[in-house]
Image (cartoon, rainbow, N blue to C red; front, side, top):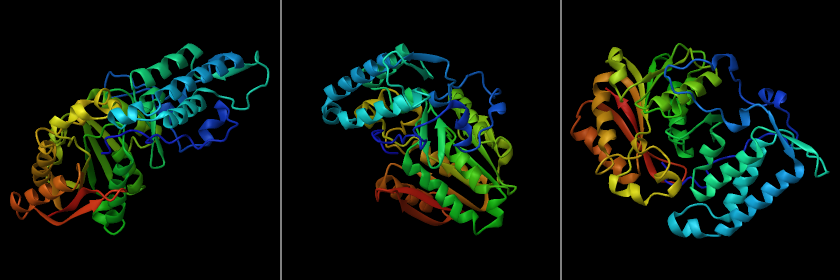
Length: 362
């Protein structure tokens, strides 16, 4: 994963004039009626842009908040960049604009200071959120409660890893192989360590109306709850099965049956965690980041489990920390799991980093 969150968030591609009632027609299909149930007792947070407009404030007060927020952003300069490659003032100013777009319902604002503006959060809440963003370095995705990933808008919150753009390529790898193989297209796939459910949802949509389905697992009840929320928003609850547990433990009924296996596991060496950007190291779940002494602990466990869980001809795709880990993983699969895998390849991410290992079980 990219260890920096700067610039990851992409604003909603919505028109300036936006009403709450028109929102559902502008986005991918959501199943609002299905959002009441969850396999865990953890209640996922509703993203800011989906909250009802039950607040209002004077236009002059909103302008005052915006001017204050911009002043705070400009005061940062390049301090965060120099400290840990964090966001600079220009990035923070863009985030302030996005926060306002998510919070304000009607962007055709009045001209009089006493005009009322409909909001999805109170003005005091906006002050609190921006203080958290700048003073506490809380990730902007947690501030607004969502992240844009592929053509999805996924709910995220504390306790759930924020999906990165490069992980989108795993879905592309799957799309390529299922387009040419009916057995893979109609088989059972597993996304281990699903987090927000990003990969599971992406693959579920790739499988489309075929008989294929996805089982997504995560050790964290918060992650399972948030992933369930995201799955139901995209009406994929009949295609994706969420299970709480560590790696392969919830899949005991699937031994030798998986047609595909994907994972973006924790792969950062333990010694590197303290040096991460504050948004990542302080706020994202360590269990989703820390891959042990050399970062390979989870990756090797996934390889070992794949031997037992996948059927012959099954496809796998794992994300790693880069070329060194990718080469080490391929070496392990060839020499320590000899005869278990074939057609192993290392693939690059958008930046040209050799980040992914793909191949087939034999």
